[in-house]
Amino acid sequence: TSNTPQSYGPTRGALGFGVSTIIGATIPITMTGFSTGSNFGLRIDTPISFNLAGMEANLGTDIFFSSISAELTDNMKITNIIGNFSFSPIASLEIRTGLGITPLSINDNSDTGISLPFDINYYLPISFSGFKFALNLHAQRTLGYPPVPGSEDGDSTDFLYIGLLINTPLAF
Image 1: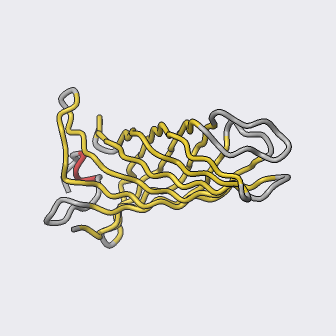
Image 2: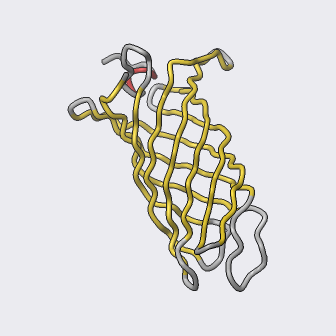
């Protein structure tokens, strides 16, 4: 395997699409009364790319399903649908950012906000049966969230997702 950004990225099929999963923890940053929960995501990398400051930037999409634990109410359920682009300034490091729509709900209260995500993925120098692994740090600002019983409506919130990105050998 060569030491190029492509050697760390997802496996791509004949049409240029690659599939990855993300598992980890969701950490609410600006919401009181909530604590760490779970996160699971699916990422599709597309064959569409463009030049960004002399680096190849690739377009993709993510969908995340998260839940954060609440002290006084039901857990918050979060779904992120994100269009993004990624680039690799060095072979084992990927930076990804984009724009998304995020439906959130607590009990019967719900809201949909615009999300501004930023990911840093550090690819580990291991591969197992076509699976490649990276440490994932995802920071996100979501402009809107549902009202929490007993408090005022919030305008925006911040989340961190910390986990493992798994590039699968599934490709098309």
